[in-house]
Length: 298
Image 1 (tube, rainbow, N blue to C red):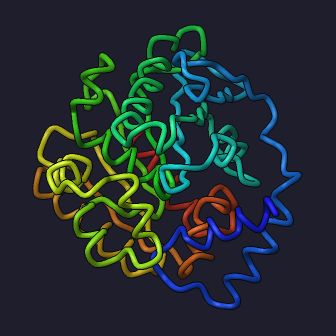
Image 2: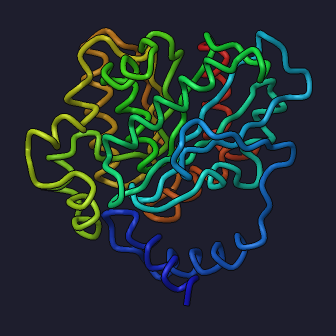
């Protein structure tokens, strides 16, 4: 029963109708993921008082005060998900092997919390990592945010709206870059009006019906400078994600912020899940793209 409910939720992650192949793939992934362990060498820390304000942290074998860090924010429709969703089969071990430290955060979930609370949690986790950089053996000046799905929206929001960073005690130019993996809701009113057939209730639960609030929570509406230093926006072949990604990139570029958009092979639900689960595999196209971009930023 639990897996059936989880499967129905994952089928609702995209605003597209899943195919029979999608459903079969999903059943296989759900069967496989139950016993998948977290990457070894992880330490859990609390960055706040709420039980969900925790992060998992991994340091590379040769960590030093110059070690850059990737901060991962999970997806789940703003109401589900967990920090272990970052691990996949290869992501964390791949970036550790590249010499990066990795942190994967939990954040408070809708409806007990708001999307504003979630963006504040992302910023608070960044602030905690910066404050504890010496103890963790990382360089607080070399930090990149990475998020998938709803997490892509959250890292884009924190990377464009300076109020979250300011409240947490740092500036947006302290973030070297933002990597968004197949997100949407970068323009919330547009997403709700033209792209949310299956997820309409999820978007309304997260963002409400007030147009002013929807705009405040839209990275595209917050993309005027200042922003994080640079953005890498990846998307698979789904109409709403492609439209939203390209529109956000255009707004960022107009503000003078470097924004690279790359289309990744994969379609619909399968592609949306694979961009998260396969990142870090040497044969997955997004891995080399992200690696090259990280080298330019870190």
